[in-house]
Structures are given as structure tokens and as C-alpha cells.
Image (cartoon, rainbow, N blue to C red):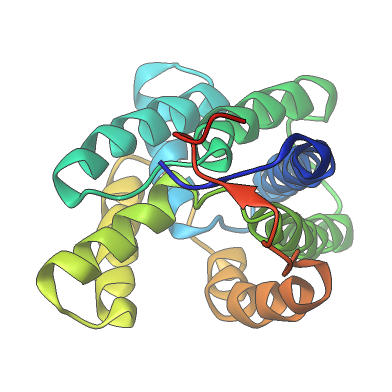
Length: 212
């Protein structure tokens, strides 16, 4: 288990975490209704949703929880943010899709939704990663495999994302220009926002086993 901030510092960090995860889920919803292509993992989630009839946000939650089981042999440390990531993004995605239109007809508006979705996901990532309360299930899977195998993180991430992209596409998930924009844009955007949103002072953190 990752260290936990002391109570006075925990609440603002939790606020940043939850705000970031809600933004992340809403950004994914915008990309979905834009219908111009999703991120590799969301192509996978959408493909499963289309085949099973399970709402895509619920698929996101189920996938996240299954990946946390895969963390056990990898000995990754779970934080508050890890559990929240597995649940809140999917709940937000389903809630947003309930209120948003199923599809946008105007092409220009679809582009705005797709680009805005990528940007909002990046800002949300900056908030929730910057809260320092634990990585998401998919990120922890990548870092765990990297540590276990000694392979470069970029290679592990590439193999995993290409794999889920192919599976998702075969199941009917949407691949398009949005997939390319996400693949090449999300890294630099998250890096940009993370530098400005990260909480760097961890002096008041305690371990879960401490009495306080």
C-alpha cells in the first residue's frame, strides 16, 4: 500500500484526485460521441461493450478491477487513487453519456469534441496523477511488467496498447484520427499539465501502518 497523506493534507489531494478523474471520464465521453476514434484502451472497452451490451463505463470499471488482480503477482503498490481510478472514470463516463447526445452530426463539431476530449483527458490526468495518491490500474500494469521483466517501459506500453487496440478493433471498437491524435498528443499534453498541477511536497505523508 502506498503512503497516505496526513488528514489535513489528504482532503485537498482527494479533491484534486476526484476532480481529475471526473474530467478524465468526461473527456472520454466527448471522444466517444465525436466518433472519430478512441484511445487504444477505449477502443478495447468499446469493443467489449458493443459485443456484450454492457455500458462502456461499466466495462471500464470491470477492466480496471480485473487489472488490479493482475497486480498481485507484479507486487505493485495500490493507493487510494488506484481504487478511485478504477471506479470513478467509468461512472463518470456512463453518467456523461446519459446526458450527452449519442452522436454529433456536424463534422466540425465532432472535431471540436474529439480535440476537446483529448485536452480534457490530459488536464484530468494532470490533476489525478499530480495528487500523488496512486497510479491507475493500466499504468500500474505497465510499470509492474517493466520492473518484473526489465524491458523498457516504452516497449511494454507499446505492446500492451497495440494489443488492446487490435482486440478492440476486432470487436468493433472505433479506430480513426482521434486514435492517432490521442496516441501522439496525450503524452506531451499530460507532461505539460502535470508540471503545473502536481503536488510535490510529500513531507507530511505517513505509512498506512502508522498510528495516525
